[in-house]
Image (cartoon, rainbow, N blue to C red; front, side, top):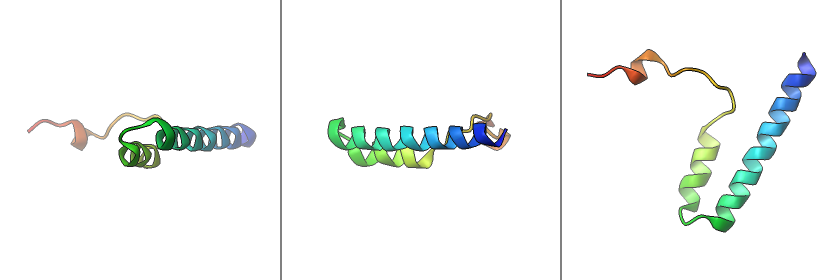
Length: 55
């Protein structure tokens, strides 16, 4: 099972590098696009209750 996790991490890193490279070449908002890629991860999980609670 460890090799699947390693593969997922490697694939995620490759996707991130590709997205950053494309943002540098094609985007009008390079800094924003790069920041979004760096601030997110590849683990899907529901948002925390405190983030979706309306006040």
